[in-house]
Every structure is written in C-alpha cells, then in structure tokens.
Image (cartoon, rainbow, N blue to C red; front, side):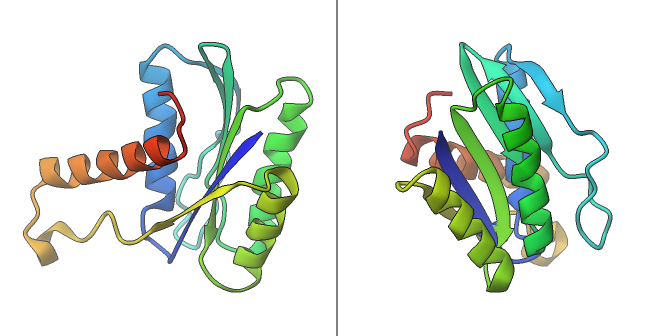
Length: 157
C-alpha cells in the first residue's frame, strides 16, 4: 500500500484536496466500494471524506478526518477495516501539521509504507475577497495542487 499524507493547518485545503481526488476518480469511471457519508470531523461540522474507490483495477482509500490524533486513527481504521475485503493500493489521508495528531499520522504512515509521501497544504483556498482571486482561478489552483500530488507520488490518474 502506497501511503500519501496531506498535512496542514486548519482550513488549509486538506479536505478539499481529498474531495477533488474522490471526484476525479469517479469522473473517470471509478466505482464506490465503501463510503462513510456520515463522517463529520472538525469544529465547523465540515463533511469529511472517508471512502474506498476502485478504478482500473486499483483501489484508492481516502480519509480526510485529521483534526486530532483520535480522528486520524478513526480515519485510517475505517480504511483498514475495508482493506480486509478490498486491499488498498493507494491510501490518502490527512492530519494537522503539528503535535500529537501529526505524530500519530507519521507513525501510521511509516508502519504501512516506509517510503510514504507527505504534502503540506498551505491555504489553497483563500478568501476570494481578500486576495481578489476569481472563482475559476481558485478552482484551477486547487486542481493543480491535486495534480502535483498525484504526479510527485507517481499515481496514474
């Protein structure tokens, strides 16, 4: 299993990146193997991504729950439980970038993939009014960040 950790500060775009990944897989004809639609993670009750998807014979696990160490563990436990039925080829998960949450995420990543990738999300979704960025430019920036992750990790999507 190849592990990809997306870490960052609160509201830096970690969940957005996971949502874009899920959409990209489904748009290319992927199918849902498992989807925890009830996943709510952070203080703002943002709907998180917890899903197992299949595309072209490859299995993708995605968990964006990562605001504290307990949630990080809950996120990867969901994927690992599903992994028993459908072995995951690529596992994307998120974590805050400091403290016990990040240490838990790093320990998990090392345990399952000694060559794991970590990417730092750094406000890929700023307040449009503050930065005078139009909606299309912002959407392109988010998609470019996901494409960068996929290319750097050599994931064929």
